[in-house]
Each structure stands twice: as structure tokens, then as C-alpha cells.
Amino acid sequence: MLTMWSKARELAELTPPERNRWVDFLRAVSIMAVVIGHWLMAGLYVDASGQLLRGDLLSVAEWTHWLTWGFQVMPVFFLVGGYANQVSWEATTRKAAADRQGVYRDWLASRVQRLITPTFPVLLVWAALAVVMTQVGLPREQIRMATEAALIPVWFLAVYLLVTAFTPIAQRAWQRFGWGSFAIFVPLAMLTDWLTFTAKVPWVNFTNFLWVFVALHQLGFAWRAGKFERPLFAWGWFAVSLAILVSITVYGFYPVSMVSAPGGFSNSLPPTLALFALGSMQVGFVLALEPAGRRMLDKAAIWTATVLMNGMIMTVFLWHLTAFVLVMTADWLVLGGLGLEPIPGTGEWWVTRPLWIAIYILALLPMIAIFARHERSFGPIRGGRTVPRLRAVLGVLAICAGLGATAGLTIASPEGVSGVRWWVIALPLVGAALMGFGPVYRPRNRPGSTGEPPELPIR
Figure (cartoon, rainbow, N blue to C red):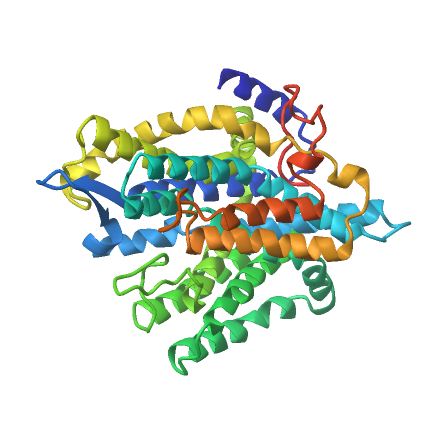
């Protein structure tokens, strides 16, 4: 960790003055909020008979539903993604002004590579664990629960990749229609919810993954264009969005919880108008704080910590639930559930949370040390040659299908000798190969493999 801090400090000192550090800070804070939220909400405990049970905090303590308004911060990640993707796309098109053939395909492959390369290890490790657990005779339902819990984060990547793929179209829409390119998604999200909850049209609610998150991605363009520069405008945006959110949850149809609610209603899977309002509220809030935040980030220690976190952010996101699952499993099997007696939501349970979170962090540190290098070990796409259009499209679809199946079906299979759905594991690997990256294309001397500090993630 000292070596990583030293490298982060070196990189922090090289930061150009025009860089918006608040973008990097929001990315780091949003991921850490997700991590802490997951560690809190997934409350496991051991009952009197010694059984390891899952006690969902949101089910046993209704007041915690309000906490999801702070911990469900995926909208902020899409806001930051809009800003970062626009920066990257404009830089790419400027460099390729003379020859635009294949620019989009190579740009998309590069963006996909940065997100998916760190994902391969967690998929392969859990495939191996599932095989081992199946062979030693553990109940397949328990194997499914473990793999499902550990791989929850990957669903987000499938959606984010789809939204990223629309960046050039979204950019042209912003340049032509301005705020209209955001506003159009409000009635689309409303119509989708009406079709879902009133007309009972099946599957249509999944289109809200695009309507809601592309809209929040557009707000990243608005942010970069200076539309939220005036704090009064940002605070007004926050206040109006908060009023809408309260009216449709506290006094309306939607539950207060932004991740799940009793009865199986979810405001996030797929997203609803309530999550749209929450995201809009969060955008106003974090951008109203930007002037003070950027002054704070002028302090060397805080900016260095932000650089350090951004250098391993995908590793933390992808592996934090693996750390949780392994700690809980080891405690139950080896120590007999030591410290797991408090029922989630009780006073004793809350008092012990800081200790347990510290244990999860300690369990996560070795994973960061081993796997963080995959966030900066990128080789050239197909040796620098343009990715064919059909292969690029098929590659993105295969990757998203594989990640979606990992979250929806899990990689654990109730049948077969291995106990693994190998086709689910194979889809992202095949998609990467189609797009021109992955182990088969990786050069021997990879950037980042010689110990140089990682790039900051915004390009």
C-alpha cells in the first residue's frame, strides 16, 4: 500500500491544472458508497441452531429504506461517465480528424477494454471456486447463493457499456437539441412505468435501463458545458428533484427504498421514475458542492487519496462482495459463526458494524494487491488495426449478454458435473476476442506491467 501511495502521489503531482478533479472524486465516492451499502444491507447471521441465514436489513428495519437515497449512487457514476466519455470521444475525434474510418469502433473497443479486462479475473476465480465447491459436495443452492452474491456488481457493467456505446449519438443530440436531449427521456420513463404497472405490458420496463441512465449520462454533457456553474441553479435543480421524489414515493406509488422493497418491488432493477428523480436530485446536490469540493481537492493529501482510489476503483467494485462472502463463509465454517449472533437491525448489530467493515477491508486488501494491475494492463486493440464493424457489434452484445446472464442466472448450474454454466463465462471472453483484446491479443510487455503508476481513469 505504501508503494501504491507513493505512485499515486507521483501521478497526483503531474495532474494538469485544467483537469476537473471533482469528476475523479465523485467517481471514487460513488463506488465507495456502493461498497459500504452492500456490506451493510447484506446482513448475515447465525440462528440458535447454527444455520447461516440472510437477514436483509431493508426487510427488518423499514427506516433504513431512507438510507438508500444516499447509498444508491449509481446515477452519479453515469453523470461522471457522461463527462468522461465526452472528453474521451472529443479527444479521439480531434486526433483522427484526417481519417475517421473505424474511429468509433476503435474508441468503443478501447472503452470496453478498460472496463472488462478487470472483470475477467473475478469471473474465472468464481468459476473455479464453484467447480471446487461442487466437487467437495456442498449443496448447489448454497453455491448459487455465494456466486450470486459475489457477482452482483457485474450487472451494472452491462448497462454502462450499452450507455457508453451511445456516446457519439448522445453527443450529437446534445449539440443539436441541448436540454431537449435530456428532457425527452422524462416522458419515455413515465410511459414505460405506466405500461409496466398500469397496462401490465411484460418486459417493457427493461427499456428504462436506457431511458433513465442515458438521461443521467446526458447531464454529464450539461455539466461539462457549464450549465450547472451557478450554485443557485444547481441547488434549485436539487430542490425541485427532491420535491418530485418525495411526492412520488412518500405520497405516491413508488416505495422509498431505491434498491429493493418488501414484496419484490425494485426501483433499480430495472430503474423506475423514482430512481430517475433520485438521480436528478443527486446530480443537483453534488454539482452544487463542486466549487467547495474543488478547493478541497487542491490539498495534496486528499487529491493523492483520490488518485489512489481511482487507480484501483474497478478492483474494489468487483471484489468487495467476494471479500464479504469469503469472510462470512470462513467465519461460519472455521469459527462456528463467531460474532454472527446479532440479528441485523438490532442495536448490537449496529454497534459491531465498524469492526466488521474493517475486517472486510482487510480481506479486500490482498485482492487489490493481486488484481489491481488488471486496471492498467492494456495492450493495443488488434495490434493497432481497426476492429471490423460486425465484430465490434457482436463483441459488445456478447459481453453484455454474458454479464447480464451472470447477474440474472448466476454462473452456478444446478446440473452437470462441474456445477458451472460455462457458456455464461465464455460469452464475455468471446466478446472481448471479437473486439480485438483479451489474453490472445495481449503483448508480452504490457503497459502497467513494469511498475509505472496507472493513468487516471478519465481519458
